[in-house]
Length: 329
Image (cartoon, rainbow, N blue to C red; front, side, top):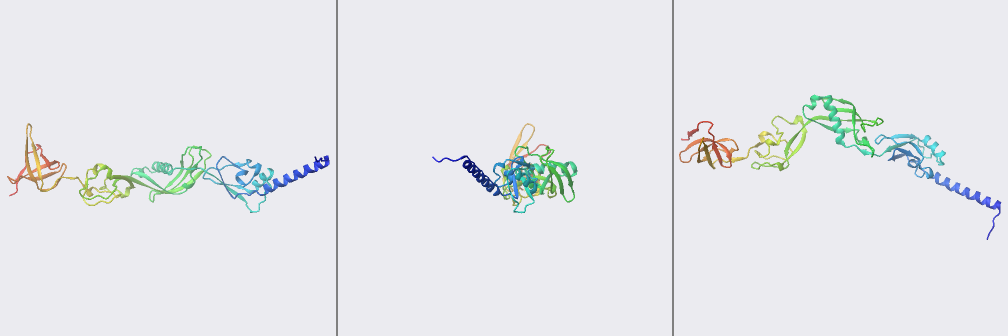
């Protein structure tokens, strides 16, 4: 067995220490400072900034910025902290600052649109009176984010809205209840809109419009004239007067009640009295929808009477007035 003297052992120890120091310096000298850093937590560490920070990776150098609000850390500050913690890094890249951002959860666009619409409605009630306020977002929304621990929310701090053009600029805070939350500038356009029913597919005269044939779309209020149908009561159960395309506003003049009686068809007519009713048949002289009053003629007497359509080839003569007859001679 080989024996070492005390002096030899001390020399060997120093050599090992020197090798360890050399190895460590080689490792930290290999550390590379990132020019752009994205963090997920509340702090920025040396491990976030350097590719290989070694044992110093958990050393905190700054608080993390808010999601969507990047900040910058000076390289001189980073260098001081790095050297104090054993990273003999040299700025061979000539960097002056490092941009640090924080990942977050993007705010749902609907939350932003709702907050802005409410603010515009409060500031300009005459615009809200014309319909729902529709918001088209233009700039600034890409930075609206919250952390995973926060409840998504937004508040409008300042609003500049031009009613004439519909353009707006606003300063918002995200999240709404965080005092330290940053402010963001957003812009876009707002206009009053209405929800109207439209057809889901092309329909032709004679087709009966059902609930399954109808969808809703939101359009600018300026596009909705007085003759545009804005509820399904005047659409479902009706039939087109002409071919109608899907997704387009439907006018009252575009549809009509479905024909219950066609001109030339035989109609069963009931005349209701106080204690009795009379029935007869006649030939329709014109088309008729439910509830419409049309003329029919008795084939034998050649006299015409006015009746109210109550169903398919069915009509009634109401006792509200005298029975009106006329000759077609």
